[in-house]
Length: 438
Image 1 (cartoon, helix red, strand yellow):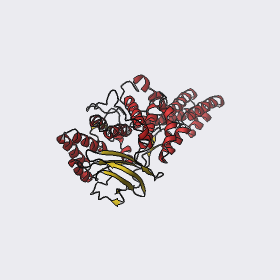
Image 2 (cartoon, one colour):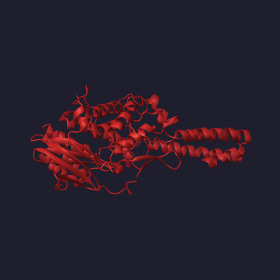
Image 3 (spheres, helix red, strand yellow):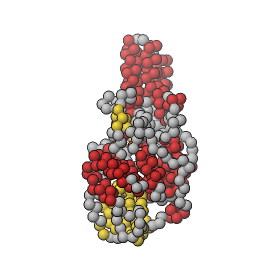
Image 4 (cartoon, helix red, strand yellow):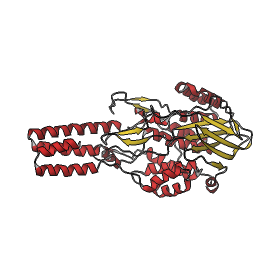
C-alpha cells in the first residue's frame, strides 16, 4: 500500500503529492484498532493467575459503561465472578449481556452502516457466534447449579441456535442453515430434560450427541442413568486470540488448530484415589477448532471484500498517475485509502474463554470429599466439596496454567453473596428457524 501511495505522489506533482501523503498518514493512523484499557488488560492477567477480587474491582466500573464494549465487559466480569463463585454477580453480568445480544434494536440498520463506511469499532460488540453460544451456555450452567432446570434448559437451547453455512463462496447472500454442533450445550440440555422428568426428550438429545461425537458415547450413556450426585464442569486452557492479517484489514484467529497441541484427557482424584473415568475423560469440544470454522464466524466476508476493493482502487490510482491523469489518480487514491482504513478488522474478543469444557459426572458417597482435577500437567484441588445424599451438586472449576491453586469449600465469595434470585424475565428458547446474523 505504501508503495502505491509513493507512485501516485510521484506522478501527481509536489502539491498534490503532499496532499495525498497527508491523507495517507491520516488513514494509516486510523487503521489501529481499539486497544484494551490498561486496567482491563491487568484484570485479564489477574483472572488467569487466580486473583479474582482485584479483577472484579477493575471490571465492575467498565461493565457499567453503556458503550461499544458493554457486552464484552459484562462477559469478562461474568468469567471472573463465576470462577470466584460470586454467583449473584455472575448471573447479573451474564443476563445483562444476554439481553443485549438477543436485542433486535442493537446494531440496527442505522447503526450497522458503520461496518461499511466507518471502522467496525463503531458497532456494538456482540461476539462471534461461538462466543454468543458460550454466553448462553454459562448462563445455563448458573441456573443448573441452582437447580433451576427449566431456565437452564432455555439457556442451553438458546446456545444451540442454527448456524449459517456459506460454503466455499463466502457470499453473505448465499448460505444454508445448519444445526449446531455445540456438544456441551447438547449434553447439558439432555441432563435438564432428565431432571424435568422427560426421559424421551433426554434420550433424543443424547442420540444427537452420539451422531455428532461417537467418542462421547461413554459420557452420555452414564448421563442416561442419572446416577451422579456430583457434576464437575471444568474449563481448561485458553481459547482463540484475534490478530491482524498482513494488510491490517483481515482478522485471523490464533492459534491455528493444526499446530495447537492436542487437548489432554481429564484425570480426577477423589480423596487421593484416582477415579476410573470409563471413557468420560474426553474433551467434548475444542473452541480453537470451532472458532476457525466459517459458520461460527461473522463479518469475515465484508472485511475481505473491503480489502480487495481498496487494493483495486489503489492499483487504478497508480495507473492513472502513470498515464498523467492527475485528477483521476487523486480520487482513486483517496478512495482507496479511506476504504482501506474502514476495512480494519475488529480484534475484540472474549479473552477468558477456555480451550475446552469437560463435563464430568461422579457418583460419590454422601459427605465431604477432596477433589483434584488434572488436565495434562495442570491441576486444581477443592477440599471439602459436598456430595449430597439425593439429587446433584454442580461445581465449576477453572484450570489455568498459571493458577495451580488449592481451594476450600465453600469459597468466601459464595458465603458473602446471597443466593441469587431468578431474573424477572427468564430466557426463552430462541426461534429454531433463525440464527445469528453474520
